[in-house]
Length: 73
Image (cartoon, rainbow, N blue to C red; front, side):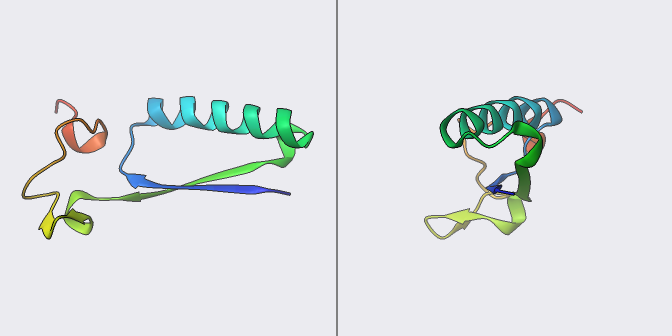
């Protein structure tokens, strides 16, 4: 049973649903493995656990990234 792991900043549930559907569908089509035998795992990072250019994302969030961290409350 193949496993796909996505490492990313926190994603919304809607983003995860879309990614899961697309990744599993494409993997199944190419590998001929049935979709129900492919596992996909999300490993999300909070903004205080990720950095770029020596600066935590919690101090300077990525402008183009969209996920849980910048959703309206």
